[in-house]
Figure 1 (cartoon, rainbow, N blue to C red):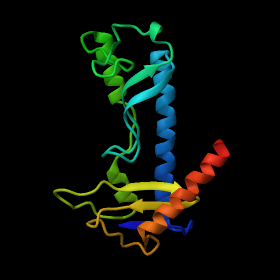
Figure 2: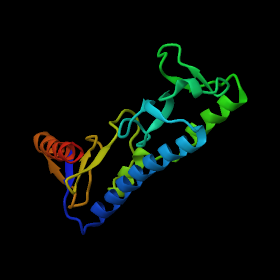
Figure 3: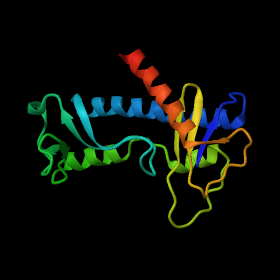
Figure 4: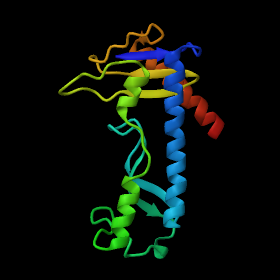
Length: 178
């Protein structure tokens, strides 16, 4: 089920916007913390991206470092399946510490979206993880058909409208980042 929230003065908009803004800041802060902790720059990360799992922020498992020759082998080892990717070397204390550090980075949870949208979570069994994004000052939500919003400011839309808003947003982003 696809929804949008456009009324900026509504409680739903304010809560969802604040949540997504906080999540984006968490991702920025985590990237900075990783750089400070490792002392290494990376080109790519190995893990999950936002809006993909129960955790709505980036989850880091490994990295493709810009200067692999500077990698400490007691902290990092090459992944056996992806030789360009370094993962924590848990055979050593330093590797276990870096794994704990990565796992302990601040994050956000899917249930925060439901809470911000005033939707009760009381669902057991299979369900679709909620997706929420800010696109062109419109908050877009994709919810499981079991998560029914009751707030009148959360308006059901078609998948076509949902995709049109996302496309417009990402085209605008491409032009500005161009």
